[in-house]
Length: 343
Image (cartoon, rainbow, N blue to C red; front, side, top):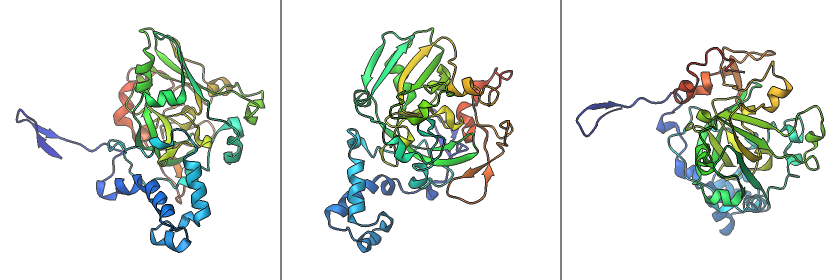
């Protein structure tokens, strides 16, 4: 796209590598109004399968199923904040993964090593929930999760998600930039890293009774990574509050890194001078390093990363460097060529 600035100089806008043509995207109004359409259908009595089919919503089933879905959708105190407006700067080059796949195929070792941990995760109570901010900050603080939500602006972003196991999906996350929390925390000049910690409660999380895992789950970023425009704290998915199996009430999404870096159900943010020892580093340092940047040319010790399986679609597709976000993040790693950046 070519244009001119106020001084008469030519401006050339290049599409980012991960952007898709606008004509191929689902209309924003259609996506964001799905929940309102469902409410209207219930209010108007369109509860029979035929009535829903006329709206293109036959897959939701009868009135009881839809009423139950709406009841679940409003059980979270933050439900009124959804759906949030989509940020057009973060779009996709592939279709959004079906909700039933993205919310039903999950790694959350606190609740088991199987992918089907939805029912087990429901034991986690997400209210009350507090988030502690400590370490090298001007003043340590503990915030109730809904008080934190009131201090930030929610938006929706469409992101790729790439698991180290070589499967991938495309997700509409709702949340706010991690940089907003960093700004709220007011770290001191000595803070070089951000350490993030998941809840620890073996009474509800059976996986945490397995002593060979170094609980709680810990992950970390450099301050440059934490304040990058792509680093995103997630509170919702598909225009609704985040379910427990996806890391409610607060998780991280850093789409240029493998999924195990996106820590779930966060209870603590600590600003540190030294890099934190992450859970997977502690458990298997020869396989999982601190950086975990997606790279098709650096295999996992036990499998290739050259291709990936996109959930819900047949076959495999090539893996992209930094998961397709090299334009936004490659500069973060200049001068670090001697480090093991990708695992």
